[in-house]
Every structure is written in structure tokens, then in C-alpha cells.
Length: 179
Image (cartoon, rainbow, N blue to C red):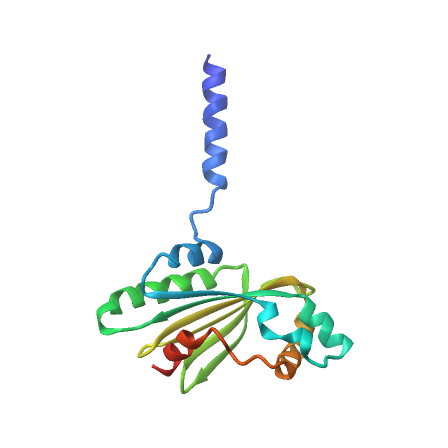
């Protein structure tokens, strides 16, 4: 009986220690979708109209690795200032995880942004674009794909420039960015 007790305690101990108490970015997206201060969009890559653009073979390969974009936007107002600060700190905490590598920081008139990668040198699991502006709010974009190659992002951007994507369906997001 004692052996069974200790064996069960050992299994429970390993189970508890193997669970991470830190929230993943995916878990954050799911939890934030319930928050009325957030707007959430999941955009399939087909919305970018890349298949209609006149693309080179390299651009086609880069575009085919893209699956979808997850967009989460928080419009800051005077009544949600405290929640804005909490959400901003939570996102920054998640992005400080060792799973993410900062590619670049950007400071513009619209606010501050970072571009981060999750994956290794050969394949990227996701590209994260995070930006905030203490007057307007914040935006978090996850670019998801299959075997995305860091070198192919230039081709992907060129392919997007050739597409006839007009931003249909993103009017609310545009309103947020305008203030």
C-alpha cells in the first residue's frame, strides 16, 4: 500500500512539474477573445489574393508557406486604461520568453513595434508583430505558416505588393489605427 501511495505521489509530482505556469501566445489569444476591449481577426492567406497576382516561382513558394494571420487589437479609451496596462505587460512578458527571438524594433509616429520570430534558423513557426501606442492602444499579429523560411520573407512581402488586397473586412482595425 505504501509503495502504491509513493508511486502515485511521484506521478502527480512529475505531472505538476511538467506543466508550465506561463501562458503561451496562443492561450493569450484565446483568453483575450473574451475580453470586450479586444477586436480579434483570423485572416486566411487566401484573403490576400496572392493566387491572382503575377508571381515568380520563388514568390509562389514563399506565399504557399503562409497559412493565416491572427490579429488582436486593443483600442485604448479612458475607461479601460488599467486593462490596457495589464494587457501590454502580459504581452511583453510572453514575448520575453526564450521561444521568441527579436528580429527588430521599430519606432514610428504611430508608436513602437517589435518584430519577433518563433522557430529556428531554417524554419519559422510564427512571425510576431507587436505594436503599442499609449494614446491609441496595441496590436498583436501572428503570421502562421508551414516551414516558413526567414529568407523568403522578402519574397512574401513582394508577393503581397503584387496582390490586389484592398483590406476589405478590416475597416474596424483601420478605425482603431486612425484613432
